Length: 277
Image 1: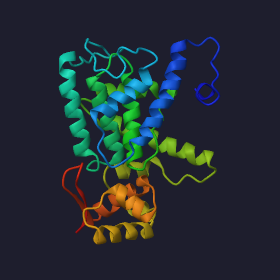
Image 2: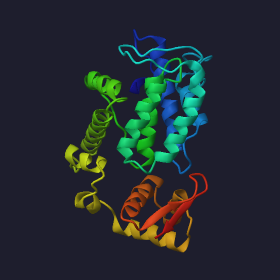
Image 3: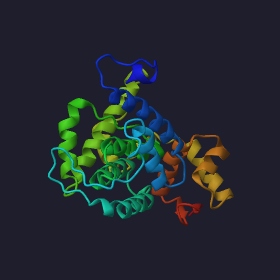
């Protein structure tokens, strides 16, 4: 994929569809980073992600809810009828807006992936879009991506298939992928590995222990709290601009302040803001 995206070279013997998937995936990821902001993810955003990824492969079905029945290869799960897809996707987007910030970021990201796949709203490319939405959920919370390597494909499919009954194994699988991705990023940067699977497990289960709190920059948290006290109702992007920090960094510290009972979010997701308690 690197030589296709970065160097513009095609790969001998590979189908043209693979090249289109690689370049489309890069466009979708570029758009993904534009969605790492305070506003909730909308249906139009999901349609655009699919259109960017799938547009060169099947122009007629790119960015359009499916109008035919589809099946998941290797699964016995019966997917919703096409006429139910628009309503289900509206409910899905509402669920995302209601639960982002309420659930642990890794748990939320895993459930976004699972719920989207179980709707399967597009003719094709649903798995790729599900993983893109999962990564978006993680990025919006200031976390790294969850890379799922081919060697983990069997476990990935098996835990996802059972997630409708018991989502915990799939959440743990995604947790482990996030941890391994973070470790690999640290290796690439030549830094030590400070996060292990046990630590991440504690965080998914909501136990923010001293190891997590030690990684929070008290100065940034104080600046955020001071800003909220001085400007009640301020939003994440406004705080980031005011203190000169990135939105993911501010979001991470806001979560700690919320969990410690120092601030709360009041109002609707689109026009509410943060207040000191």
